[in-house]
Image 1: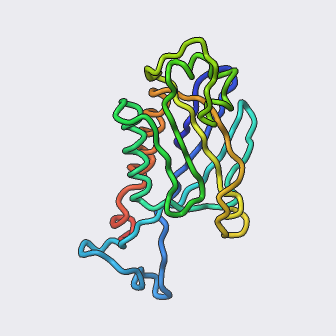
Image 2: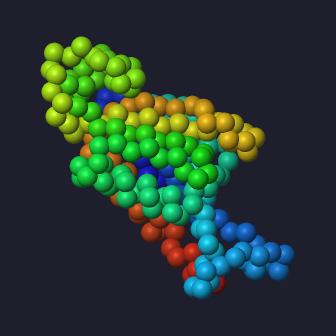
Length: 197
């Protein structure tokens, strides 16, 4: 399982657990109806996953069902998380093609980081915080917004809303999440090799 969190006294966390390659089989037990590229792999590779939102020791919400991510979306997410962690970019928004969840991460300025506890709503609304420190230098702290699309979880209709969390994270937390996701993806093995077994 990959977990995006920040180690503090009251951690909030987003868990993303990659389960297996999703397969569509014909009645003969083969993937004959799936269009393939010359290597024999389907055009679009789907990965089944589950998600959860936690605050402290409490589970706020977990997936009602297995959901899916396409491989390209997952690879995009890992790449952009790593770009955030190493300072190549300052913000990202992830809306996968199957919008079962959304993730937005933005690096805070030194000014916003100095008042992140007392002015969290103003920071998220991109309003002036009135901080004494007016530095525009970027801090090693990120504002994280993550939510799970509840209508899709219960009725297969995307609604664009549902339970979510706001929390702060740092570059090390983001890199750890990206590495955990890559590890989960690697552990799935090759789609093609699984198909032949």
